[in-house]
Image (cartoon, rainbow, N blue to C red):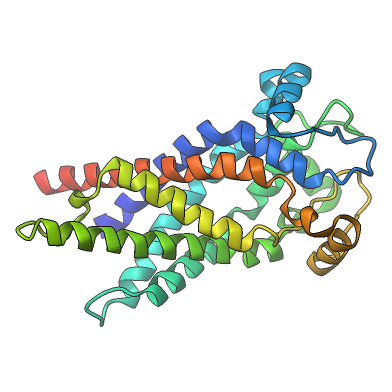
Length: 297
């Protein structure tokens, strides 16, 4: 079962590398998603560069990396668990088959996403709360991850840590689409390279770092375009604006139109396409390194 833990370790390292690189853009994306032009207590930004500059000038590095600790914790745990569950499920599904298929990739990714979502939702709730703290924030600000977690539990109860779970489970489709696209495109490239090098076994050695980067970005683009509108904006001023996911979608459509469903998508793409490339570059290379070490032993 060593290969399963190798996937978990490689996934955790990839998650750590990715969130370190992309966190400021994630802060911007979160700020854009909650701003609807009607709340005077929320700052407005013209575009992504303006948001980065404004946050950096008014809040400093702390503002750009607001919620960094829970983001690192959540990303490291999430990617480690995701790759572990994904590869475990994939091996289970193909046990009685000669090769994988798109349906197996889809089912494996959906299963892994559901498990990770249930286990890590509290971390993402705390991260979002910390990211949305601005100089205009009403009420006592959280001093950090532990303070936010304890305060939420004390004031709102454990159910508050699972707010957004339903749309989070809907977004399992995002990961399923991304991993299916990644695996299917990966097979195409490997098969093509294998035909060019008939004496070489079909293996990840046929792929390069550039391949991993391209596959990661391409698969992420497909997933983002397919699932981005499925989001529920968090409540930021203590007054619930949305009763549930359906209410959020109806209100967004009525007040903001189609553009409302794609708020912050520029920051999302700028963050997530390079981030996806980094994730798979680090994951695949760390995994290959761990495999080579195991073979030597």
